[in-house]
Image 1 (cartoon, rainbow, N blue to C red):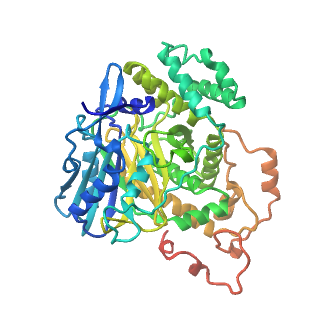
Image 2: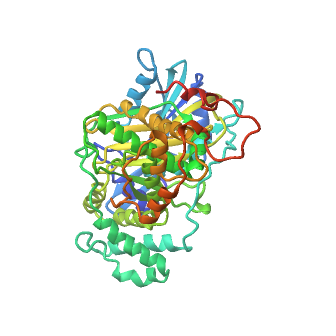
Image 3: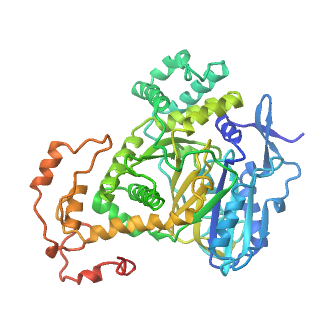
Length: 542
């Protein structure tokens, strides 16, 4: 009899989350500048992935008693690493169509839940489309798995493991054992028959245990009430019923150095800058479609890594979910950026991520119908899933071929039909998008807007003469030389008096004195012409 092991409650929840309209697969696309030798690729995958991680040789088996990982006695690497040829010119359009098609094709449930498809004739090189079920591992773990296939030189043998490192922040600020206590508490509550409806996961039976962690336990319970009471986000064209047809698109990468420079100048993180660009792109898309943007916010679900240092190198799902409302209503790109920064800081200090991990564990042991109803309630509160994964800074090679681009999309649950992927690699940032045809039939019209919104902020900052940090209103006034109505804060209120006084007392700047710098720094010995300071890729923009 094949060996088996019990599947964790969280992994079980992801296994049972599959629907025909939203499959729980993490889909990746890797683009190479030369053709990959298929045999070498297959040998590399077998030696470094299948040989190292037993999970990729196991089937997911569901029984009345629960879910199990069971060894596949007839495992064959050839059933999981396939080759195919694109039709026609085999360019970006054709590859996007293939990725769209594969993203809705279920994996064989009787075999290990993963597959690689090598495209041997893409744009003079190769492309690899990977599909791995979310029950095997979360996105952070799978990025590590994919990186284990790569090398820093093209001549490494298949059996040698990559020295590339993938570092992530961990949830080290929580008391030891709190996450485990939360998961055990919620799982036990459901196992004992606690109702998930009006009682909303009544944790009274084990509240004392959580309360021993002081503010952490209280914070988690408070966050649960806030999560259940959270209203749905704005009714846009991103709402509705999902279909079985998806569309995948991506744009050209942008230099990571420019993103970092902009963030440094404005006191924002790289993540803040990129999410603000997404918010601006969605606003521009709605406006192009003639859709109202006044008062509109698009709530995104954001995976948050909860792995500790001891979890590195392991599979399974160890992440929580946070929600971020993108201020699509805000026209001022800098006000929009600062709102995103403020909301991201709130998310970082919230208990949403560990709470949602515990909830996933709880519904993983509940009846499947209860899980579906509960997750539908939560999914209805959001319109998109967005991920930002920092990858390696140096170029990598897979089976001897240099990796040029990499995109990864996590699945959407319920009737969420929008997925945005942000991934950095080799000092570049890559935006990608997967959409349901019912919501956005043409994501290729949105992806260029991500870069356009970033360039808008960068060019605007290059035009400003400033010696002290400015708020969004001052930036707007300097750029356009006119008084603009004060931007609203997240609650819709006008700026506080202190902010207004600071703006009033700020020294006026003359456009004639503008010094287009990215951020304050000591004056150079000689001044260069303004045009020469602007990166070449921006000089011809309107």
